[in-house]
Image (cartoon, rainbow, N blue to C red; front, side, top):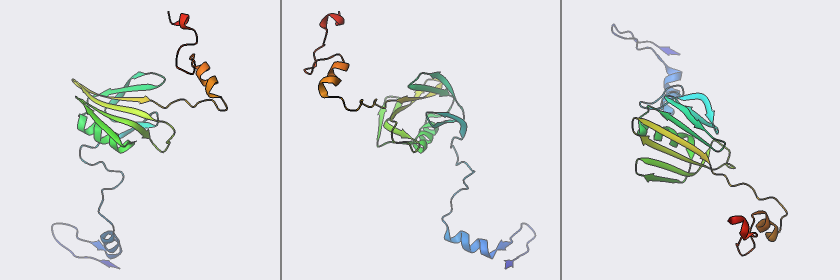
Length: 162
C-alpha cells in the first residue's frame, strides 16, 4: 500500500512498508557514506591495515612501514582506532601509541602503531612486534645454547664479545 500526499514545494510520498520498517531500525548513516571528518580507505594494505586516503607509504622495512600525509591528527587517530584492536593506548608528547595491537581478524600478529604530528605532516608507523615462536621439543639447555648463553645468562664464548 502506498500513501501519497501532494504538495507544491516537495515530494512527500511515503511507502508505508518502508516507513514502518525504518522506524524499528536505529537510524545510522548508510555503509557507503563517510561521517564528517572521517577518512576513506584506499585499496592499498600494509600488514592488513588499509592505508587511509591522504596518506602514502614513505618507508618500508621487513617488520615496519611508515606512512606520511597531510591529514589532521585527530582524523588519523579516529581512523586508526577503527582499524586496530588494542587495550593499551598511550600519549607520548605529540604521539599516540597503540601497544600490543591487532590488525584485522588475525590475533597471531602483534603490532605497535604510532600516530604522530611530525610538523607539517602526520605520520603513521606500523611495526610488527610479534615474537618468533620457539622451536618445539628443545630442552632449556639447548635454548640457552642457541642463544649463545649459558643457563646462568653468561656468554658461552666471552672472547666473542670483544
